[in-house]
Amino acid sequence: MDGDPAVEPGLDSFSLTFPLPYRVAFIIVLAVWGWGLNLHFLYVRKIDVPSLIRYPGRTSAAQPSHHRSTYRLASVLSLTTLVSLAVFWLFTRRDAQRVIDYDWIPMTNLLVLAALFVVPLRSLAVSHTGRSRLLRTLRRVSIGGLAEAKDGKFGDVLLADVLTSYAKVFGDLFVCLCMFLTRDGSATDRPDRRCGGVVIVPLIMAVPSAIRLRQCLIEYVRVRRAPFKDTVGWGGQHLANAVKYSTAFPVIVLSALMRNLGGPADRAAATGMYRAWLAACLLNSLYSFYWDVAKDWDLTLFAEARERSAPDHPFGLRRRLLIHKPGVYYAVIALDLALRCTWMIKLSPHLDHVSDFESSIFIVEFLEVFRRWVWIFFRVETEWIRNTTTGLGVDDILMGDYQENRYEDDDDDDDDVG
Image (spheres, rainbow, N blue to C red):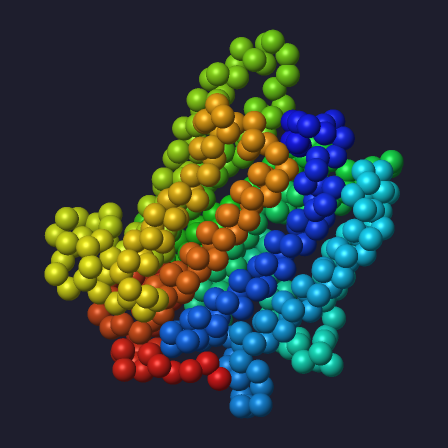
């Protein structure tokens, strides 16, 4: 059961106020605000994000900075959603039947949000260039494509990683569309996550991981074909990264199978399937956490004892820390581990049913998006350090877009974004 047991089998109390289409819209708008905050903070810390993703800098002082332009777009999207939500509340007044009948209001809002990413808004001082770049990148990334380093490979990787954190949101977006287009259905009714069949939603959720898997394999092939491969290794880290993304598939498949268990015969297999799901979740979470810390952030927490305890950096971290003081890094490591393991609430007999409430599902989706937002700060910082530090090792070159003499050393770290 997916709703509040006090009001089932109808709409749960949370969905009466905040139906599924608005929850999807909220997280989409949140992504734009989050990216603006990423750009703003990193700009303050003298980390040139546009140069890392090969995005053209501002050519005139009269042009707004990248983060201000993003904030303006986020403000337009937020205003549109807030107005739509206010109108929806005015028409429905939390009446279950009206909430179901007026599903066209939140679905229209989703359509408007999609249009705002395409239609030029220069009259509102919202740049169209960034959105056009995003759409082009999405088209390339959507099939697992990957630009060359000089054309913005890091931006493709960053976007594709973000998409993996929106996998459940994409599933909910499909559910909204499916219910809206179903005869006698409603996008604001109690979410039917089997709409369209039991396979489609899990398949949609698996797509982002499949995209990153293909990108890793592309990088591996490029390393193998590179004329300088003897100096940068054989590409094993890209294969290891591909394995990491492949561990998401058993979790998705087993979750879908357990959700569709039915009669006594199925219950007999439930125990074995549950144990397999538990093992798959544990592998995926711990492998991904290790990769975040050791590879994406280049921290030494999982390195050999001598490197981990080296005197030139705080324990388990690294020499250059551009984001904040060491305590922040330790807190973020703990946060990343905790949010990687939110599935563990299903292990508690007291929280197992709570995790299936619509409000709980939304909170879990929000927490994953929040985790990714925090991850971006440190992932971009790491890429900046790799590109502004000479004498990098083989692993750094493999995992980054290192180009010798692309930047000067630390003295030039305070170049501003135009």
